[in-house]
Structures are given as structure tokens and as C-alpha cells.
Amino acid sequence: MVNHVPVITHKNFFKFLFIYSKKLSFLLILIFLIGCSSGKKFTRYNDLKFDESNNIRVLLDNASSDLVITVNDAINILVNDRIIARVNSGNKLRLVNTSSSLNLVIGSKEFNSDSFIITPADQSEIIKINNKKYRGRVNIFLGDSEIKITNQIGLEDYVKGVMTKEMPIGKANENYNALKAFSICIRTYAYNKLSENKDFFDIYTDTRDQVYGGVDGESELTNKIVDETKNQILFYENSPAKMFYHSTCGGQTEDVQNVFGKKNIPYLISIKDGEDPYCKISPRFEWTEKFTEATFINRLSRAKLIENANYYVSDIVVKSRFESGRVNELDIIVNDGKEVQKTIFLSGNSIRSIIRSSDDKSILKSTLFNIGINADRDIVIIGKGNGHGVGLCQWGAIGQSRNGIDYKKILTHYFPGTVIKNIYD
Image (tube, rainbow, N blue to C red; front, side, top):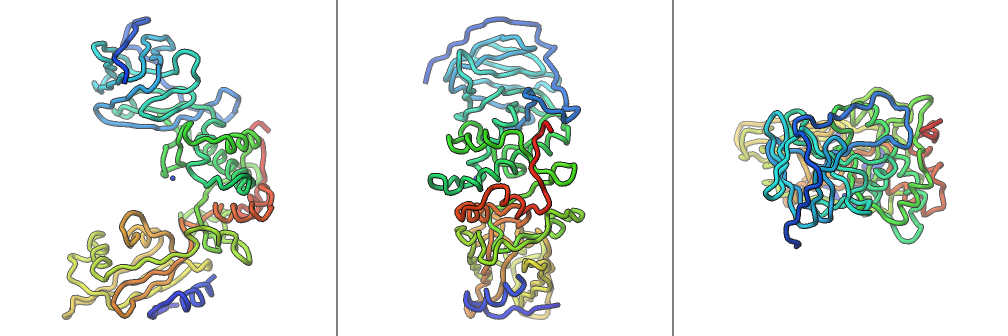
């Protein structure tokens, strides 16, 4: 079915569309110096039999040549589990990749090994480097010819470090059950990443996986919540559930097949957020983007979909939508004002990444939209939701929490057929 898009307004848009339903001076105390060339290698996770000692490795930084770490509180440097130096606040660690090993330069001192470990000095439990705070330990090593820095941390502490970076806390306990459900989502996602058995690290610290802030991502409330759900993950039948979540579904979540091309997953289907959408409280529930025609054409040119910006937009056609109402296929018809006319076809995730927001600071909020050309020849997009739409809707979960719905029911709403299990069961 092909829909030619008319001039649009907020009033007629929603009627039409929803029919489709994140300085001290230098002081270095040399404690013990060992032979430098035989640093400890990092082992892989060979199974998923968890105990209290299991850790997840978060990639904090990587570089092909040099890296510098600023020390914000006293730390110990270890090689082969032996302390070789204590470094006080205000100093810098310079890491140099020699291809075969690492040089660690601290003022006039230089150490060589294939790996180093940073732990907190004195009685502190927190490592403070580069103006950030981390629990656990920090590993520095060569991997794939790069310098890599990871935070090796207990799974529960990792979950605590993600909570406030990925979801609003709210006032008092209004988001309590949403946060409780979300803590299980974070842990389930991390558990699945551990099962991939990567050589050098398990998970990124940004939106490639989950945004991790270390201690700065913690709060008293969310730490309490993580403790209450300790070791709990989401299962479907006998396997950990594949985990997806997003900010705001706009009233209807999306089937995972339509976004990520995965095979049918029974608990990642399109569902209604509620007869009266729970996520309507989201600041991104409804939105509008407006582009000048020149800006819109430049987006297409930048994506190399047209050879230059000397075109005009003749029409924009929504060729098909998914059952959720999200745009599946989009035709943009352009001409050069003379004889040349082209039809540019966009589909799936490319719609968001090519069109982007009007200020060009991010991809388009979602594909749940209507699009048209107004009387001034501006391209106007009026939409709902924020994110890919698959899995848990964070603002929907918050809406349910504020309506007194329990965290277990929130999870079964967004992941039907799943159950909560303890990692050790």
C-alpha cells in the first residue's frame, strides 16, 4: 500500500498515523621492582557458572599508540599481583605501546610489562582516575595491538553503575518498581554479554552496550534496588532472555524482527503500551522536526544518495508501515528543476540515521511519524516516541510504576512469557 503524504498538522496527523497503531606535587614511592617483560595475561570466561568472584570487564578506553591517565587519589600499580609502585594524587601515568609490550612512565620512572593493574591505595575501595570513580580494579594491557583499559568489577556493582545513566530516578519512590524492573534488564543484558566469551573485554561503556558511569552512576536509592534484585535475570524457557530497551515507545512497541532483523523471538513482539499509553508522560512522547528544503536535500547529498545538492523535493511517499505504525519504507522523490527526477528509497534504521534531527545532533527520534511538505516548502515530521521501540519502554515502565504496578508485572508486560530466575538456580 502506498500513501501519498499530504500537507500535515498536529490535528490531522495523529488521527491519520495511529490508525496504524545518558594539585599536588609529584611523589612516587618505589615499593618493589620486578622483571618487566612477563606481565600477567588475562584469561577468558570459559563458562557461566557464576559465583561471588565473577567479574565483568568494561572497556574504559583504548588507543593504538599512547594514553595518559590522571591520578585523582592514591593508587597502587601492580604487575603479576605484586605492588611495584604507589602513585599519589596529581600525577599522570603515560602509557606507550612498544608493539611487543607496554611502557608505563611516571615522572622519571619507567616500567615495562605486557600488563598493569591499578587498585586503590590505603583503605579506600574506590579508584579515582581521569576525574571518574570506579570500584573493583583497572586493567591496562595490550590487546589486538592496542592499549586497552578496562574496569574489572563485580556484576552487581556494574549494574549499580548503569542505573542512573540509563533511566530517570524520579522523585522519592515514584519510579521504584520501574527501576526495579530495569535493574533486572541491565543484569540480564550484562549476563548475555559475558556469555560471548570475548578475549579482552566484555562490554562497552557507552550506547554500543549500556552507559556505565562507575561510582558516579550510583545513588542510594538505586543501589538499594539493585541489592533487592541481586542475582535476578530474565529467562524465557531455559535460556536468558535477549534484552532490548528504549526510552519511549509512543504507545506501541516494535517487533524485534522489524528493527534488528533477528528471527522471531516470542517475547519481543509488538505490544500496546496501554489503552491510554503509560509512556505519555515522556517528554518525547510527541515531537516535531522541521527542516528547510535545502537542509533536507543536504542530508541526502551527505549520505551520497544524490550527487549534489542541486535538487528539490517533489514528493515524499510512505510506502509501507509496520503494524505498530512505524515507517518501514520511504520514497523521497527529488528533481533538478529541469528534466532529472530521482526516487530515493529509505528503509529500516537508515531512515533515522540519514534524516536525523533538525539540529543534526542526533539520529531521528523514532520511525513512528508522519512526514510532509508545508506551504513554505519546509519538510515537517510529526512523530511519537524515542528509540527503536523494541522491548522495555522505559517511560512506559515509569508510567506503570506511578500507577502502582509491580515490577514483575512490568517485565511480563514488555516481555510476555518470560520469568525471573536467580543466576545460581
